Amino acid sequence: MGLIMGLANKFSIAYGMADSLKRHGAKLVFTSQTQYFKDKIADIVSDFSDHDTFVCDVSNDGEIERVFDDILSKVGELDFIVHSLAFSDKNELIGKYYETTRSNFLNAMNISCYSFTEVCRNARKLVKNGGSVLTMTYYGAEKVVPNYNVMALAKSALETSVRYLAEDLGEFGIRVNAISAGPIKTLAASGVGEFSKILAYERTRSPLQRNVTQRDIGDACTFLLSDMASGITGEILHVDCGSNIIGVKFNNDN
Image (cartoon, rainbow, N blue to C red; front, side, top):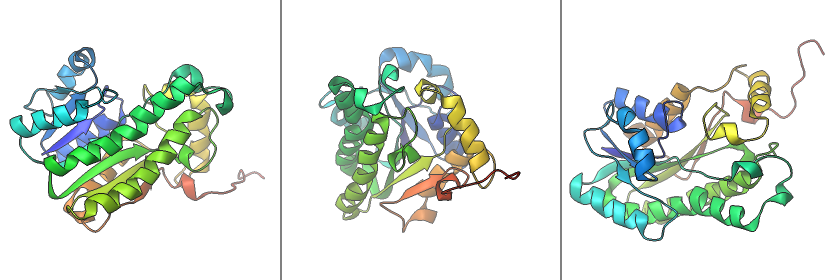
């Protein structure tokens, strides 16, 4: 049994992960930010879960602890948690990074990074010994990607958090990892300025000469959460058709 936080629609990365986990026999529960979003995904969730979706606004103090206590009492212990949450004002995902406002910077860090720290802190009482916690990041945390702006800072902090949290939770037998997914067309990604150009660029840049798919990411998620990855913690696994290994790539006609 596992928890997925961040399912928004059938095009989201979280949906691909839920689909793969279900195909491999996992039972799932979900959280949603508000009652409104819970109602929007009700039909989708019904394909994966026998349980009601739990409302959890991670930006509110104490909300994660309260919801995890609720899940523990109604569902019982979990084998894994997937944190697929991030946020920035889309108006600040275009143009120059230095134009980021203080309020958006703090909000992006809170939702995209700190929430994962709080998830892991509370995971100790919810996730079984030998369990796993997983989050999502992106290559923009490592290298400059146009218009990714404050999200790059949030993801960079998130990746560092993964390593520290892996050390912290190791004594409890809990593994902590992240998937660095290549660009994929989701509602969230569409808020990044000129995202279609990023998709096209990655398609020609990657060794596999294609963009990553929901299934690619979902199956990698299932692997990291399974016992097959029992010796892996504190890692950032790139699932991007290999594009992160490329420094310079010439066109075939050059």
